[in-house]
Length: 111
Picture 1 (tube, rainbow, N blue to C red):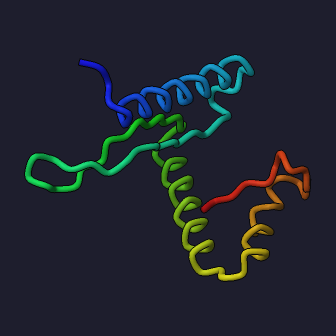
Picture 2 (cartoon, helix red, strand yellow):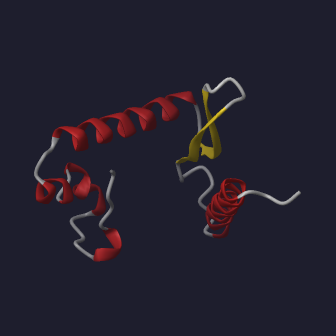
């Protein structure tokens, strides 16, 4: 029996996660790179209850770094949810982290 489209999607996502790990090693940045990536979708079990089918990769030094990173994600999510002006969202508070570089390569969307 072949994979359905959701399983195929997650398999491709797993390849992306693996590629990020390979880049981290290639650039000798293990211990410097913080990576928390979860990609998934909600599905339902046989009782109709929602379950998360996901691929994740986790590369953090310790639990303190994990907590700090999760706080950053929560703050980013809350900040973006509270800002109604799209232009203001695109000029986020975290742009200073990118040293003010306005290159389109460095414009990230946290939504």
